[in-house]
Structure formats: structure tokens, C-alpha cells
Length: 205
Image 1 (cartoon, rainbow, N blue to C red):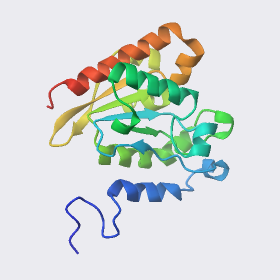
Image 2: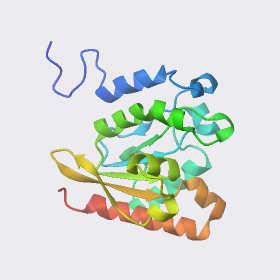
Image 3: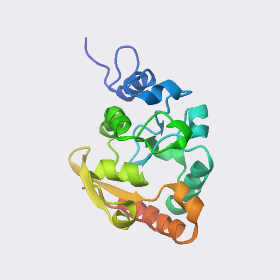
Image 4: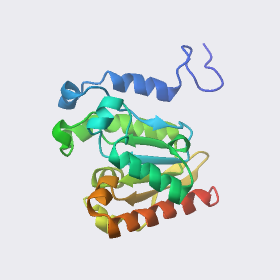
């Protein structure tokens, strides 16, 4: 049977819908036992900009959507003020799709179990710019042990997109860090968002 021209399967699912359906039933790591629901991702599946955070917290676990609590409000504010967009114009996901107990850091085995879901999102959305929010997303996607303080403030090549154009990764702090620290951290986040905006406005290469 020939697939529809828009890439949807015969049952009407897009490839990203199919990945999401698989993730919703995932039990590959212990986090599955404590979740209310899987927090897969939200936004435009054809977005040029993708944000990747750490993992869902309590609010996200209840809502089924990433970044809906205090950190999400700050993320929305920074998107509006520095990028001139809202979350409908980008895609937002996390390294792990289920809430770690008591919002603890995700463990290496949990990150490894969830990585194929994130990789599928990156492959199918094929963003021109990825903004990583915090240490876990940055270290995973840049394959480094360096921390966010050392890595932010720079732009990194991140494979290719579309017909072979260059994609980029911009690391920045997690919004929770700015809520805790304010001041310099928030100013540096703003600068990183401007860096992403300039990349998005540049020529497609």
C-alpha cells in the first residue's frame, strides 16, 4: 500500500504521532511505575526551534504537558520577550518523559531508556535550532561531561536538517535555575535566547 503524500500512515497517524503512541505505553524503566501520565512533548511538529529540558515535575505529570508550572511560565515569558513567539511556534520536550520521584535528578539508566524517544522526536521534527535547558539535556545532546556554566554562551553544530542544512544547539540554564538565582542567570538566559533568535533569522544553509 502506498503511504499518503503527507507521510501519514494508513490509519491517519503521522510518524511523530506513532512515536508518541509508543511512548505512552513505555515501561522500560522504573519511572513508569510512579507516573500519572507520560509527558511526551508539545508544539509544532514542523518547528524550526525545539527546547529540550530535563524531565517533568509534579505540574507536568498531572497536566501531561512539559513546562506548565513556574518554570514553564518563565520559559513562556522569555520566548515572548526575546524570541517574539509562543509555544505553538516551537516544540518542547524533555530528556525523560516520566516524573522522577520527588523531582529528583533522572538517573543514567532512566536517561538511557528514554533516549530513543527523544532521538525520534529530534529526527522527525528536524529543528534548525535546539535550545537545551540545563545540565542533563546539554550533556546528553552534546555528549560531554562539561557543565552548563562552561558550555553556555556558545553555539554548537548539531548535525544537519532538511536538505542538508546545518542545525545548531544553544545551551542555556534551566528556567528553575533562574527562578532560584535570578539576576545574572536570568540575564544570561536572555542572551542565549537572543543567540537562538539570530540563528533562526539567518540563512538556511
